[in-house]
Image (cartoon, rainbow, N blue to C red; front, top):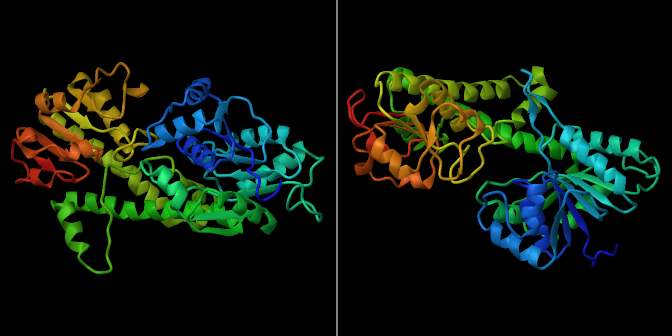
Length: 434
């Protein structure tokens, strides 16, 4: 394929990263086939619609589908570039063992249609060594092809790793403008992937080896997790000492070289709550700080549950509203969400006394079934609930004026209503800060 020709692209996995990535590639006039195991997802996209919530994604998908640049299928098809963007969870075995089975399943499908000259790019956040493991799998399935790093001759295909760095709610903007680390099995592979990304990425693309690129993504999220853990541990210390953690952090951050993050009910999402375990699994004896950060952030969820239970038990019969289920503000992603964990624990214990407000949910997740808890709108909660537990800092919650919550007791785990703070222990208007 000449450098001026548009490659045929196959994006495997049409979730929160795969679908926006496929749409942006299609916008760059590269024909894209998106692959997903869900027939519902495939049918939705082929109608020009979307199955996830993301700013401006609906219009972009509708446009590229109408132009014939993006189509979806459950069956993999031949292409020039294969982008793998499938989940990489950890196993709930007590050791948080990384599960790369979805990556290997995708690689197996790719191997069946692979031809000389193709490029395979893994984007899924993965443990160090996964790209090479994927290469070895394909080599075993396709002995007719020369794979990079396994031959002294020019390889027939290129394999690289290139993780995304995006913020939900700004995914389209950040996929285009953020810098990218492109790690090739060989330098030649990295250059091939670089040429592809330069078609639609305006940020700086830096080439490296595959293992360094894999580790870079993990390090970025582990760094954030450890810093959040400091804020969450500080909030629990402040609670023990009877201090307002928000005031302490605000004052400490006036130091020119201090920038403490804001605490919350824990850490969620597929990245920050998961990726540190990939490092821990690969180097368990060398990662005590990263492990402790994970333990602190998980402990914060239980701390919030315990405080909320005490507040509810001390006020029997008063209706309670848990505000938010998403793992962060203004998105519909509930994966590994501490808010979801806290709200479901309270629902199981207090049943119909609990109402859930989540503007990005059409129904409650499965763990709320048979608890008696109901999904209600914000206005209903403000009118009927005497206890408000803020778990997510959605904008719609932030703008609730003080007069609409004046008669309620507030447990604010996000610090969005500083004006609600009055003398601890007084009622109504009690505000627990952390």
